[in-house]
Length: 449
Image (tube, rainbow, N blue to C red; front, side, top):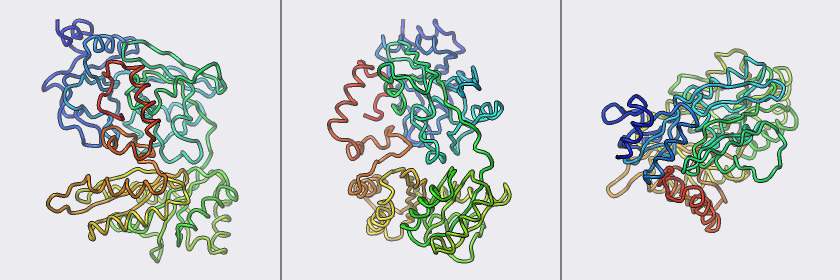
């Protein structure tokens, strides 16, 4: 009996998608790296079913990938063509919200937006927030250690989870559904799976940490004349304003391109940097803080959004959908010490323009959590490819002790460059962990390491 026959016998015909029934949805994540559909798709409804699927696949040494909302940007959920895709889309639902403990128990296939709404209904706040909140799923958020715009205040996804349940390659269920903030009873096993991109196990359930609501969030846009002043504004806001929820910097080329495309105008003059500053300290405190920064010359101009429409306009520039229309566009997600980001941006831009003088190169990012994104659009000559851009961006980054991935993961897209951010000893330990938990190498093969 073939593996497909065994899966069909175990779960029924309706649980499997094969051939033309697979459709385009399961062919790739948002990276676009997937070019072929998986061998088949199976959609379990429970941890027990995930366990049985993996047990059968492991016995047959059949490679598997796990798919959630398919919003990843590094190819971690993109099939290579011969894998069995385990989609968690039917493992959806919130099992419990504990207001006393400020926790939520949720299935891995639940979209982030549903979890945010459920927390709000109980007077609590789930700190993770991403632009893909309506489609990304909690399991994928955990598997990639998602970041987003609130990291400066609340930390990465790693800080938003207290416990989780995962299934190992052989079908073993590891249920570590801890609900306490303090628990030092041995190894913190959940950390093995957070950020592992489905290569060490499949996350099926989680206990999320919730917070008190931050109150009314005030959004301001600040014009700044130099990168050192951007950093000074960040530190001043954290100490003199407090309640900083987001701090997003946009370099001139990025800001100008998007505002022109969106037909928006915020200031009378162009400035080298524009910063979105969000705080829960109130409109009065924010306006007083910005007035002080203006009088001291720390910022050149500023405005405070007084309506949701104004907030949306400001954030629409940061979200940067117009820039996605540029030809041959590549997006990079890197991190490096905050004080070095300005110098890196200059050095990286110079190196790229030396190779492609007419290229569009622009920077934007969270900055306050050391993360910056790079947009590169260039026309490539004979013998050139987009991989040449990767080499330049990451080679320059190496001189600043940076990471090739701040929040998007490694997947297949960044795997050739992982050695630039990890030592040989670290890579060797990663391989030992992989072999220990997945000796037959069936989980997401070809990804991360």
